[in-house]
Image (cartoon, rainbow, N blue to C red; front, side):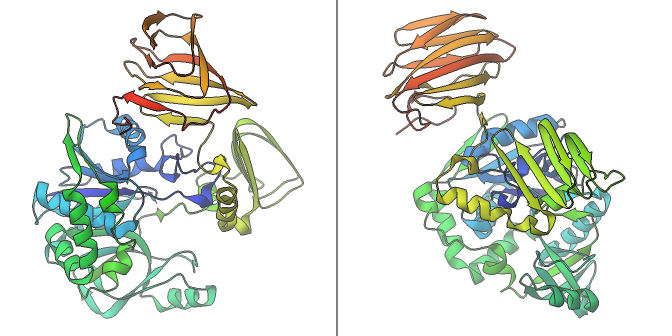
Length: 480
């Protein structure tokens, strides 16, 4: 039986700011063991029995970063596919697009396992057993969700109520889905014994989920079908990629798969499981991944502590000192520091909302920004000038481009650069440079086998990243 894990990589993870940002969201956060959540999800999915392809639904701006992260862990060279959204449209649209694409490529009898890119599962053996049970039920025509055995009265999760008198082989029929409860209600759910945390993971036969969507959410399926018809499908030696048309996708209803289908269908079952699951939904959850010291403190990075207890510090770039404090979360990044009491970990998202309201870029970008060709790091940003460190991967190339309002001075720090500067083509070695005037077409390439590292000094009246006109590009970013 063919199984295709579908990894949904959307959302920002605003409760994990300042590490999680719109251009570097939660799935790409590195954990204490050196891997990030999207790598762990890919590995967990690809190791399952019967997997023929891993399909990822993500924002088009994150394709190349996702590809880079997968390349680090995909040693077995599992087949990959991507569906690229121009913007978020909630999970019903993502699931429908994946199901329609898989119906074409693998047929209606293939099964899709829907996974979130930003969840952590510690017990892979138990997870694989739960998936095997789910696949058996899905083959019989059920829509399967995974119910996590609750260990405490959590108020931040939705719950699944299972019918006590409707057991199935490996699962239970679902009576209803319940919104996030208050503490007293959550306690009654724990005591009842037939309530489970809603993990947001699902398993369906492709033909079944499309049949049910056409019955309960026909507007979603029809709009997504029109979008796919207007979209471009490309294939390469590395993966198959469907880039969804923005104009058509804007007409797709913005609704979750729970509301659109799971709460309406009579064919829903849950597989109860205890798999060491966490949605890593706050800094409190992240802190649990680090062992505490004798005072209950958990530290990532260089930290000194005096008379302080039960704190979590994440500070990789500089020394942090704690004196006489308790129950604090301290998250330090090069351009932002967040300090919160542990009891208010869920409220970090309100700071992100304030940053958005005042158009502060620190909710969107880190100082180091990933691009298909490499990275750039803003070292200093002053009046009429900006200094960047640019790293270009071997054999990679920036677009042929032009800026209206700024000039640039490029200095090679290490490696070799091939440069187009107006009518000239130059080869620059270490300690050599070139000056590019505003209005001149230019391009930077790395012809070597090691990273090219450069310092770029920009000067001009306007230094925004949107002052760019692309003429040629290897990554499909040419302006129309």
